[in-house]
Amino acid sequence: MANIGIQFSNLEVKILDVLENYNHLKQKTKDLNEAIEKSTNKIREQTKLINKLEQENKTLKVANAISGNDEYKRIMKVQINRMIKEIDLCITEISNG
Image (cartoon, rainbow, N blue to C red; front, side, top):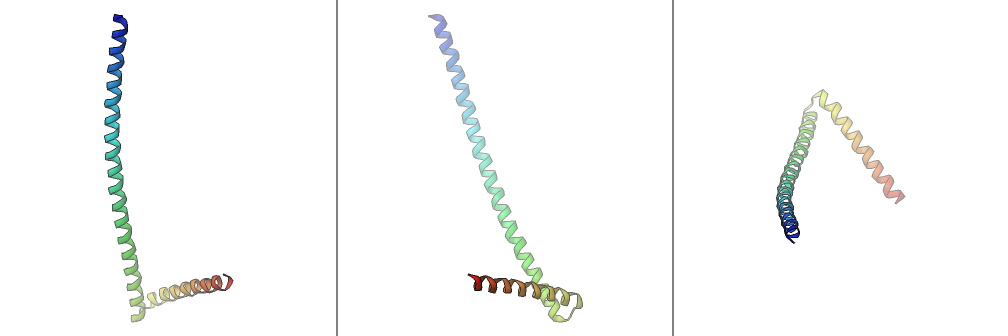
């Protein structure tokens, strides 16, 4: 009987250890998920900023092209040609659709 009591006590200690480890891992998972969420939000904000800056850059290039800068005129022509191709693709899709 004493042997069963000792085994039961050992089992109880092991169960308590497992529960303690489980709670620790649960908290660590929660902390990591919060860190992931913060990082994801930061990435979203930075992506929005990058997109905004890229758009501003394009706008400045267009403004420079309009002002007569030869380098930017070439860039403007390339952009216009790209836009024309996109419009042509849209017209083709609408016609086929």
